[in-house]
Image (cartoon, rainbow, N blue to C red; front, side, top):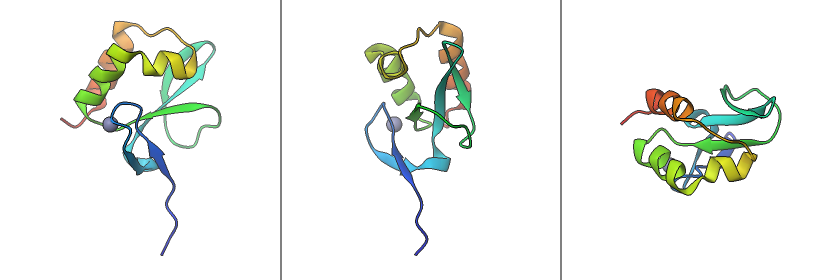
Length: 83
Ligand SMILES: [Zn+2]
């Protein structure tokens, strides 16, 4: 069996294959959505609207990356979600 790395969604705290998740890193003091090949500390989110909304409420991304997020960033996340 091939080893596939899994990461935890900060919204629902379930584990997913890395390529199913949205990845957010801190770049120049701001949160940025990236592909899976970028280095550095990151936060992962599965593509469910409820997880994005739950992060917005709990500030899990802000706390994890020590950044401030604006409405525009959450809209960008919601654009990428499946449901
Ligand atoms: Zn999730």
